[in-house]
Image 1 (cartoon, rainbow, N blue to C red):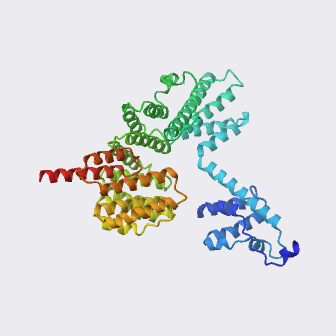
Image 2: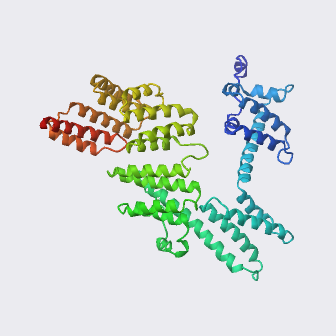
Image 3: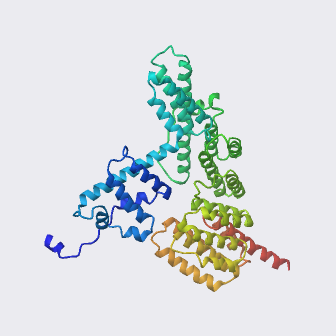
Length: 497
């Protein structure tokens, strides 16, 4: 076998994909910081790791082509030009550098969290001869807690850690001043942390149960809900809000819970973290979606108001990133309530926060969607031509808009042709789920029925309206119902005439 392999030209083996994929996530600033990290003799005693990093870093700062050319032989020659290739040694170096990169990420995260660092230091300084240093650190922890962004569950856990550390130290000398007070405080903050986390998990289960069948539960101990009524927790913002969220889904018919939840979100917006506030607004949207699916279309306006609040409070975008799904939902809702000018401004302003690889596609598609709503069908078709259909979501969305556009323009030949090609696309595509194929096929069928129904056939119109009403809101249900109403209105106009 050795002779057989020796007779062929060796294939260049790609250098450590695991290491490169990790370092690719680093910004230029982080790459510079990581090199300083490697240069510290205390942290890294292998000079070869720094040299290996320099080789990879040079390729990272060029382009994908430079990375693709980074094979094992070339890396080895850059490190050891006079030595024979040793694959095991190079793999060990790559593994060590990967571990150093992970350690760097942990250190950077710790350095960015002054509170966690101070709490660790509090434990380290628990020695009799370091009391002055310890007192200074504990005062710093209290200042950090007092000026924290908001009271998240992490805030309560940090409060527990502070008081627990003081209590643990005091427990060795029971006569210590404030012993019972610290014990009580530690217990209270631990309860706040536990209750907030437990309620958040319970909400996640309720939301999951809303759209998936599951045998799993998030159980609560007997008396749990009664215990939450304790006045000690009445002014804990997260616990109060989470309780309202749960009531929204458990007693969904009582819409007063939703109104109270939104009121609390406004009232306590500055007392909880932006991350928690963002999550709570998304929970509110889930409730509104439930109501919309029940036919209460007035909740579209409520969702629009929620998005507006999120933008005003600057929590829609996180770390200059906006999830594509959120971008799409905002546009769908704003178009649904007729806020066309607002929608255009949103697309132009917020598309820059989308991932680079889908940014232009999302912008063009959603502008086409906007022009369809504005009945500017020529422009809608023009923009749809620039949408890349290699993404199934955009392909389905674009075909759906085109179907409606041809119907609105009365281009029945183009409509029939598109319906046939759309069915073929759904049949041949292996990525689209069976449920989604069923929904789109049903949509095509309903559009076809619209083109064949006669205004005089009231029985068929009533049957079609019933079929449309039974479809989900993932399809253009409102548009279908509007078209039925127009057919009926035209018949009335003819009768009157």
